[in-house]
Each structure stands twice: as structure tokens, then as C-alpha cells.
Amino acid sequence: MKKRAEKGRMYRFFFMAVLTAALLYGCGSSQKLSEKFDAEEVKKAAEEVIRLVNEGGFDTLAEEQWNAIMQTSLDADTMAAQIGPVVEELGEFQAFDKEAVVGETDKDTEQEFAVAVIRVQYEKRKAQYTISFDEDMKVGGFYIK
Image (tube, rainbow, N blue to C red; front, side, top):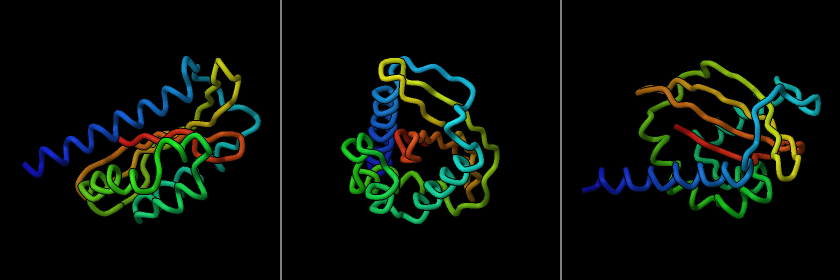
């Protein structure tokens, strides 16, 4: 019964993350990274977000890293309840694996985003993070699978 409840929480988190991404990007298109972003800076910022997730630094993420939209849709308590168990299940962080950075433009607002896709090796298995940053280098989208 406990595993079923944990699975339910994981599915709710994934649904919420996908919904957040859909709201942010609408019919956005993937493209080359805008000159407004530096790929290495985006990778380092994404790695910092992942480090905070691994450490359970959800308050710091919500207060300092999330943009206004993310702050209203994914607060610290929700992250702790939904993301915490997922990360615990992965085991100890081992290393960053493959990394890629691409650009996205929201067709409705014309706002540009940098999207980092980072595969991470954990003790028990790998996970893939997709983290979007706005021009202020605030997180505008977060997804883990």
C-alpha cells in the first residue's frame, strides 16, 4: 500500500511538472541557444539546481532560483513532498553524465529560454533533468524523469 501511495505522489509530481512546462512554453519551438545565454553558465546553473535538489534545499530553490511563475506553481513544501521521495529512491548522487543546452522561444510571448538537459548518475540508477532558465537565469521549468 505504501508503494502505491509513493507511486501516486510521483505521478502527481510528473503531471504538475509537465503542466508547468506546457504553460510556460505553449507551442514553443526548440532552436539554437540565443546569444542572450552562455551555454556553460546555463550548465553550471542547472548543476547547482540539481545539487540543491539532492541536498533537499527546496526552500532555497523556491525563494532564490525559481521565477515568479514557478514560485506560484511549485512551492517548497510541494517540492519536498513530491521531489524528495523521488530523489531518495535514486540513491546517492554519483556524477553528472551527458549534458546539452538548447534554446526555446515561447510563441505567445516571444520570451526566450535556455533549456538544460542533464543526465545524472545516482547510486541505484540514472535520472534526467530538464531545467529551463529565463533571461534572468531564474528557473522557469523543471522536470525530472
